[in-house]
Length: 151
Image 1: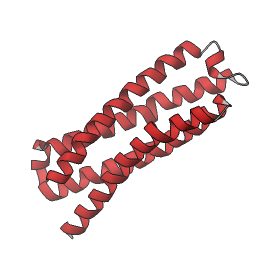
Image 2 (image 1 turned 90 degrees about the vertical axis):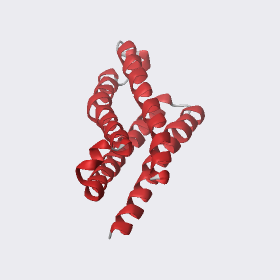
Image 3 (image 1 turned 120 degrees about the vertical axis):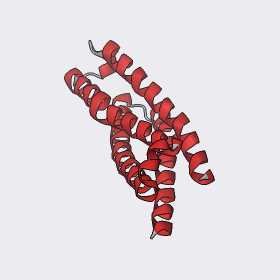
Image 4 (image 1 turned 120 degrees about the horizontal axis):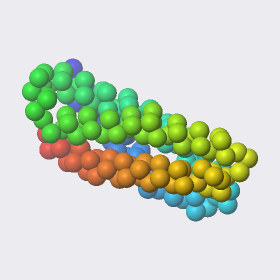
């Protein structure tokens, strides 16, 4: 059973990290580069990031529960555990904090593009904060992958 839980943890780590990198650094930039309708591109990107948030919550919770199941309280002294905690908290902050506000700003701006509305400055700030959080997650993922495969 321990072997199965470790294999599942490896798969979920791969899914979480791979999805974050593939969506954030490949799919969304290509979407904005190739889609002439930036409002549509933003809507699609928002949907991808929302689904990515759910994936991150599932993966993060499993990884924490699995680590506690294997190590008990000793998990609280493991860097891998805390990397996942921070990544999960950042996922929750984006998903339940920043994304809903950005979605609301887009809705208030309709039918105009939010970037051409009175909400543009606030949207840009939130987008910048979200991008910094995303970059932080991306850097933490490097350590997560290294720690996972060294552990």
